[in-house]
Amino acid sequence: MDTTTIRTFIALAQIKNFTKTAQQLFVAQSTVTNRIRDLESELGKSLFARTHKQIELTPAGIKFLEYAQRFITLENSALQELHLSPDYSQQIRIGTTNTIYDSHLQKRLCRFLKTNPTTALQITISHTQKMLQDLQDGLLDMVFSFSPLYKDGYSCHVYRSDSMVLVVAADNIEYAGGIYKDDLQKIKYLFCNFALQGVGLFIQDLFPHHHRFPFEIDNSTKLSQYIIAGLGYTFLPRSVIEDDLLQGKVRAIPLLDFAPPKVNSYYITREPSIIPEKLEHYLIE
Image (cartoon, rainbow, N blue to C red):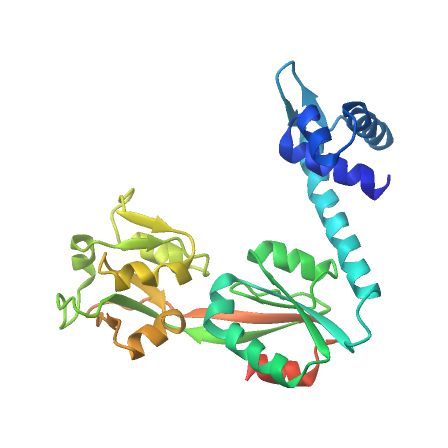
């Protein structure tokens, strides 16, 4: 199988229509049909279930799609490495969650790039499980995540240990003296389903089962603007909200009879590590 056929398979899996896939790839519909037929023949499996109206991936197609996407990603990574500009001595590929990037890495990366112009950095902001798989596939050199990877051939260390803070707009004086756990059900709580170890479950357990929140979002770094606007309360990692606390845009509410868990983030590399000491110093210290 060649990469053209695999790319055609991925496009068809996403579009689920032979005619539209052909239009996107600027080829005849018969070309798409022939490529998929040849791929299914080579694999010995049907990848699509066809009806007169649409197509869907078969169980084999769903399984193959994951490997096909990783294959194309690996090919792109190899080509980038081979064609690295002579102006750069090395390229380092870093994977990070959005929260860790915004809270810790972005400013440090800026400072590194200003003083180390010959090191090329490729930053991928993604979900933890995909990044850990890409690290093991050799597509990333370093990962910052909220989940550790303890496995032979890899180095995993705690990056930051963060506390969760209940915050509200600075001009909201309610619960200025602190809040009890039972009072949480009385406030307008804006919910973020944290993928941060057990924090998400901890926060959910603070409220009744099937509690309906007035607002939900899956990215903690995007939540602070709603708090500043006076739309409610929420728990956020202190590193996410630190600048807003210092600038007086929000205030922290003391917790009187309970405490949220700490949140650990991790940095993970393969062993032996290829991360330059200078870069590690900027990012880790």
